[in-house]
Image 1 (cartoon, rainbow, N blue to C red):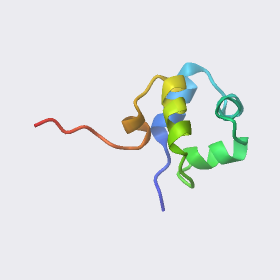
Image 2 (cartoon, rainbow, N blue to C red):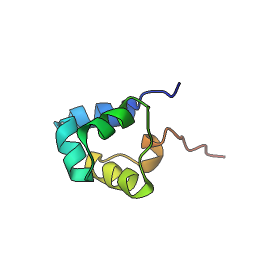
Image 3 (spheres, helix red, strand yellow):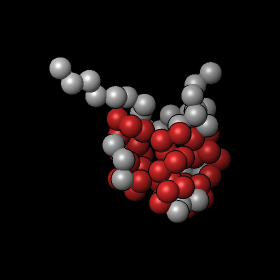
Length: 70
Protein backbone atom coordinates (compact mmCIF):
# COMPACT_ATOMS: atom_id res chain seq x y z
CA UNK A 1 0.00 0.00 0.00
CA UNK A 2 1.29 3.47 -0.86
CA UNK A 3 1.81 6.11 1.77
CA UNK A 4 -0.60 9.05 1.99
CA UNK A 5 0.79 12.28 0.61
CA UNK A 6 1.14 14.23 3.85
CA UNK A 7 3.17 16.97 2.18
CA UNK A 8 0.33 17.83 -0.22
CA UNK A 9 -2.32 17.60 2.48
CA UNK A 10 -0.42 19.65 5.06
CA UNK A 11 0.59 22.32 2.54
CA UNK A 12 -2.97 22.53 1.20
CA UNK A 13 -4.39 23.02 4.67
CA UNK A 14 -1.68 25.55 5.59
CA UNK A 15 -2.58 27.59 2.48
CA UNK A 16 -6.28 27.42 3.36
CA UNK A 17 -7.37 25.46 0.28
CA UNK A 18 -10.02 22.76 0.19
CA UNK A 19 -9.61 19.59 -1.83
CA UNK A 20 -12.37 20.86 -4.10
CA UNK A 21 -10.48 24.11 -4.80
CA UNK A 22 -7.23 22.28 -5.58
CA UNK A 23 -9.00 19.77 -7.80
CA UNK A 24 -10.62 22.61 -9.72
CA UNK A 25 -7.27 24.40 -10.19
CA UNK A 26 -5.76 21.16 -11.49
CA UNK A 27 -8.69 20.38 -13.78
CA UNK A 28 -9.56 17.09 -12.12
CA UNK A 29 -12.36 15.64 -10.04
CA UNK A 30 -12.37 16.00 -6.27
CA UNK A 31 -12.32 12.21 -5.93
CA UNK A 32 -9.22 11.93 -8.11
CA UNK A 33 -7.44 14.53 -6.00
CA UNK A 34 -8.54 12.79 -2.80
CA UNK A 35 -7.08 9.55 -4.14
CA UNK A 36 -3.77 11.35 -4.72
CA UNK A 37 -3.68 12.66 -1.15
CA UNK A 38 -4.48 9.18 0.15
CA UNK A 39 -1.69 7.59 -1.90
CA UNK A 40 -4.06 5.66 -4.18
CA UNK A 41 -2.97 7.36 -7.40
CA UNK A 42 -0.22 9.48 -8.87
CA UNK A 43 -0.56 12.78 -10.66
CA UNK A 44 0.64 13.41 -14.18
CA UNK A 45 3.88 15.36 -14.41
CA UNK A 46 2.15 18.57 -15.47
CA UNK A 47 -0.35 18.36 -12.61
CA UNK A 48 2.43 17.59 -10.13
CA UNK A 49 4.36 20.69 -11.24
CA UNK A 50 1.21 22.83 -11.10
CA UNK A 51 0.34 21.56 -7.62
CA UNK A 52 3.86 22.31 -6.39
CA UNK A 53 3.48 25.85 -7.73
CA UNK A 54 0.06 26.31 -6.09
CA UNK A 55 1.21 24.97 -2.72
CA UNK A 56 4.64 26.56 -2.71
CA UNK A 57 6.53 23.30 -2.24
CA UNK A 58 9.00 21.46 -4.44
CA UNK A 59 8.05 18.71 -6.84
CA UNK A 60 10.55 16.50 -5.04
CA UNK A 61 8.71 17.00 -1.75
CA UNK A 62 5.38 16.11 -3.36
CA UNK A 63 6.91 13.04 -4.97
CA UNK A 64 8.33 11.97 -1.62
CA UNK A 65 11.96 12.38 -2.64
CA UNK A 66 14.76 13.97 -0.68
CA UNK A 67 17.93 15.60 -1.90
CA UNK A 68 21.12 14.04 -0.59
CA UNK A 69 24.08 16.36 -0.58
CA UNK A 70 27.58 14.97 -0.88
